[in-house]
Amino acid sequence: MAVRFRSSGTRSARSDGRPEFLWRTYPGDMTASTDTITMFGADWCRDCRRTKAQLDELGVDYTYIDLEAEPAAADVAREISGRTQIPVVVYPDASHHVEPSNDDVAAKLRELSLI
Image 1 (cartoon, rainbow, N blue to C red):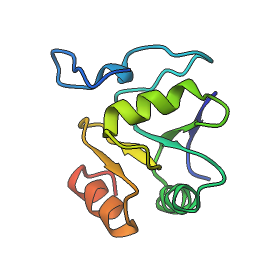
Image 2: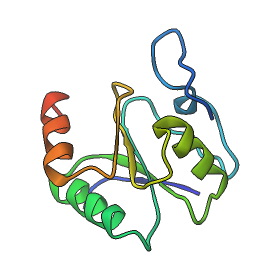
Image 3: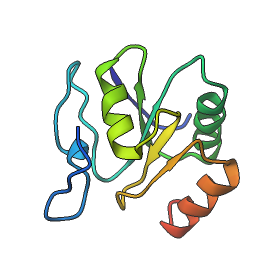
Image 4: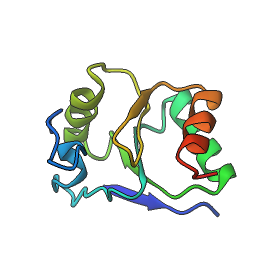
């Protein structure tokens, strides 16, 4: 199930350059908005918990896709990143990070004027 948080697939792109997963609906009604961050992760993953906590602390809106609840989404995350590591964080400009540091996330959010 996709869970949209407000603090407190394939690699092909559409004509607007956004990855296909941003407009495709997946099992469990996993639809990600193109105007928000999407994070693929799992509760057992320490890096995922850290990145979620950072986004929450910064007050950034994001959609969290729990890979344990939606196993098919793991294929989407892998197609986006080309890797099996998580978290995969996809930004509104269609760029992404895999296992990002807090500094990586903060820098990207500043670049996008989200913080």
